[in-house]
Image (cartoon, rainbow, N blue to C red):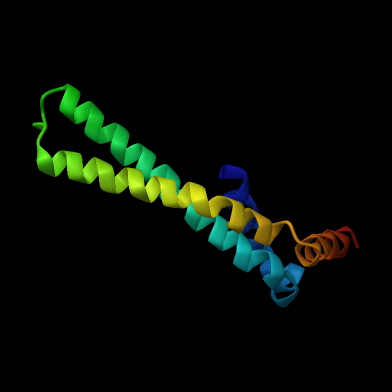
Length: 108
């Protein structure tokens, strides 16, 4: 996720130099992948925080907590299921070509 974010930030910061329109085949699927990875990580972190609060007795166990954990787990699983689709969108010839062309423009 961090490497993907770095790549996106490079596009955002240097898009004018790199021709933003030419990077569109990379930018859109990259944003989708980042959303999916972010949803997965956020769900993981929230679940861990709830478990920590429950273990420290700061948060009583009950139906609401069980429901919240189940919702977070469902979101995490949806993100895991979506990952392959999002990754495949980046692993296309048009994306590879756009990245290659962008790197060639930078080298000039």
